[in-house]
Each structure stands twice: as structure tokens, then as C-alpha cells.
Length: 172
Length: 200
Image (cartoon, rainbow over all chains, first blue to last red; front, top):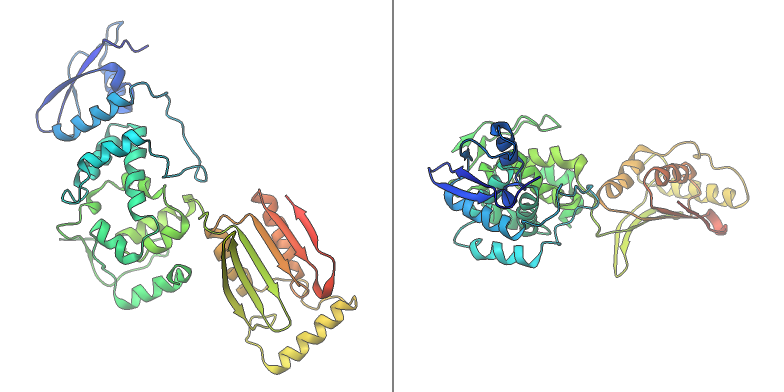
């Protein structure tokens, strides 16, 4: 059982400390495991702070998302390949991302939150941010995808022609 | 900046240039688990496009192929065999794409006038109740040609029209529908036979 008033201190990769409710950290598989590994008393209170490999700015965004989603059901529902879809991002989440996912940011914050969600094992946040990125490239041409992801073409002309031939249906 | 060639290309393809990662490319710094998680929300048609983006992405596409959902863009596949050609049509309600019409013989060669006359005689014979001489097997070229859209699109209905020559293909689709429900297989027989519907 998680007691709402129980709190845990997290130390970030850039040396900051943040204290949050266990009601939020219960959604993080990584933090919950760390607490379980460290806890010795009946209330499962960790003896020391939990170190997370996430910087302070990113962790603040993660905590903001966790606060909104603190009452989400656990365990997180898994979906099959055919059931999975990217067009069901809740309105609050869309507005949350739009606040910081600006053109000038070049998706650096989005990548940082995706990485944080993966490291902290927060499945709902990982799904939402990955859907956001998937929606940016869904239905786009090769050139548009390169521009969005800021990737360079490192194929030769011959290699590119060969790959396009293998996937010829998408070229027309 | 450069990094080594991706080593997990399922085709063991070796590319000429080294993998290029520009200073602006923050995507390539994502953990591979994260990239693969993003790809879970794309479909097979997106993967077709992504495979031409860069070498790194190409490797991820190969990893994700078996785990990625088929596109919902198309839901009907129609294969129509006339005397002259075999045509493949893909459809979705308001969208009709006549993909390919090919003049092919039973073994995949382009038809000559002699082939055409021979096929016409065979079809007339089938219309009179004679067995097809090509009933036993499905040519590899036709199998590969048809399986491409089957692997990429969430086909729910398959129509085979005038399939006198490649009857074995109807059996093949029947088995395929049995293992990939829900699908409807509709077979219109050759030379004016009554249509046979087999809903799985």
C-alpha cells in the first residue's frame, strides 16, 4: 500500500534535490524498485534519497506530468501491435507538451523527457511522448522526415535507389 | 561526427559511407529502446518511408518490421485475371488504387501473341469444365507480388475474380484467411461461374 503523505527525496544528475509524494513515484518502476531495495521499516520509507539519472529541468516536467496523472490506474494497460494508436493523446497532455516543445527547442526537451520516462520506467509518460514524436513523422515523405528529425542522408545514390526499389509502393 | 556502421541490418547490408550524425541531430542520441518505442506507433507504410531516411533509421526499421502494425489505409485487395492480364487493385471506401496490370504468362514471363492464344484456349476449356493445366501451383512471382500489400495493409476483404488459371491461389488465400481473421474471401469463378463467398 502507498500512503499519500509518504514522501521521497530524489537527487538529480545535476545535483538538485526534489521531494515528492509516493503517490507520484508509484508510477515510476525505477523509483519504486529503488525504494523497495532501500526500505527497512514497515512504512517502506527509504533510508536515503533516490538518485535519478535525469537533470533537474527535465525532472520538473516529469513531476508536473505525474501530478496530473497521479490517479491513473496501475498497472499500466499493455496494448497489442494492432490495438496501439497514436491519435489518442489526452487534451491535457497535448497542451502540456505544446508549452515546451517549440520549434526553437528542436525537440531537445521532448527527447529528454522520452529518455527520462524510459530511465524512470514511467510507461504512461513514455507512451505519450513517443506518440507525440510518432505523430510528427507519420504520413510524411522521406525529405520531410529528415527535416523533422534533423538527420542527414548517409546513403550513396545507388544504395538509396536499391532501398527505394525494395519499398517501391511508397514512392508513388 | 561519425560512428560505426550499424551492424544489425537483417540483410547484412554493408553501406559505403560511415554513419553520419550532425551536430543538430539529437534524435540519434536517443536510447535505442526509446527509438524502437516511437516506431511502435507507426505502421508498415511509415517504415517503408523511414527506411530511406538514414542508415541508422534503416537498421531500426529492420528490427521493427515484424512488430509493427499494418496500415489501415487499405482494406480490400482485388486480384482480377482476364485473358490478357492479371491486375491488382487496392481499395478503401472512397479510395481506389489500381496498382498494377500485368501481361503475364503462368510462369511470369511477359505474354507473347502465342501465349495469349494459348491462354484463351485454356480459359475456354475451363469454361467447358476442363481442368486447368496450372492448377497445382502458384508462381513465386505472383505470390511475392500479392504478399507485399498483405504484409503492409490491414486487408479485411480479398476478392479473386476470374481465377481459372491459378486456382491454387484461392486455396492459399483460404488458408491465409483462416490464420489471419477477420477476413472475407470472395471468389468469383472463371467464365461466368457463380461467385462463392467464404467468410471467416
